[in-house]
Length: 178
Picture 1 (cartoon, helix red, strand yellow):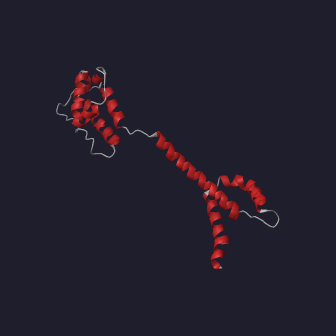
Picture 2: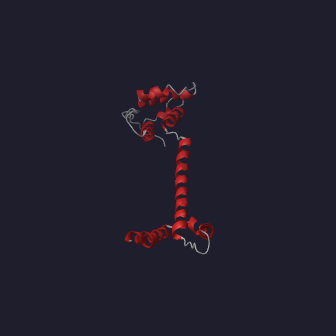
Picture 3: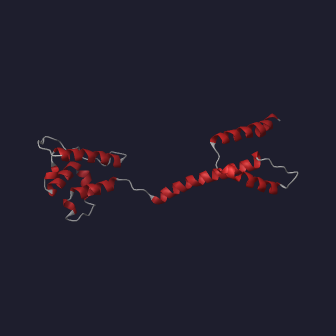
């Protein structure tokens, strides 16, 4: 897209304020989008690389100059506007803490697994019929576990509601009435 008539009165975006936003990544993305529009409107890409970088650094403001000085750019990189934009983007993009993310995932997985274990135990001890007269409790429990194990692993919500209702009606309500 060729821009022939350039309005020289186009203003650059306001300086990027680093301390004012909670979400720096979103604020940076918005500021960079505004600068890109300014870049197109002023036909900045046709100017020498040093001028492009100077306009960018003037527009971004003094807060970002402090960050820029920490980039340790080579002489070639200092003249590349794309490299400087990429460095700022990497700086403002939040970094994932892999150890913490694994911890959170494992905690969720553990709670899910533990819930299934507890549900399984509740079903084995309360809902499944256990006849203690014919067999010992342990032998009957083992048989019931083998018989119902496949069905218990994938329990749908309607089945859970039915089981809860059965528990309340057959076991807990009679206890309350006595």
